Image (tube, rainbow, N blue to C red; front, top):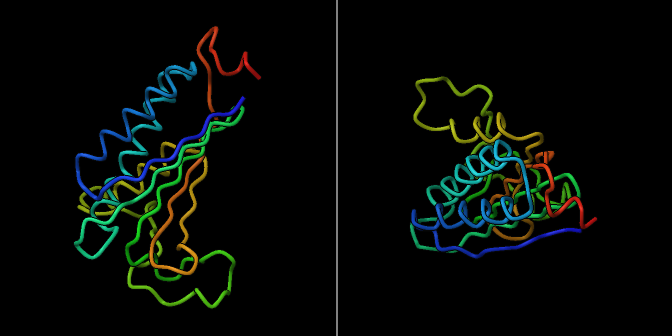
Length: 162
């Protein structure tokens, strides 16, 4: 059995806890281990906060959060309409949509402890198993997606439904 959902949220700080609570409710109902729930909720909060802060030119555009739970893997994708990452690929690679963009590809593993920016991406990488950064195809925006292998509580609903 699989679960997926997608939210379109306004780029407002109040949208971050809404996305986090929906994720936590989904994972708790499915029977995901509480430590995994916590890690993914922190990672999602950081990705949403980045979309709110960096995802546009000041107008309250929407951003999108999509969550896929399939088998023992959860994939979360946060897409905004901001300037994107300079040097990050758009899909497909080397398409006419690839163009220089003002924000550099993040290097969160190098974020110093005293840095004000960059710690969110570092946390996402530390709390999840695989992180990808890319630009949207054919339009401005960044996509941050990350995966985590799930662990289940005893008697969890989702693994038994498979």
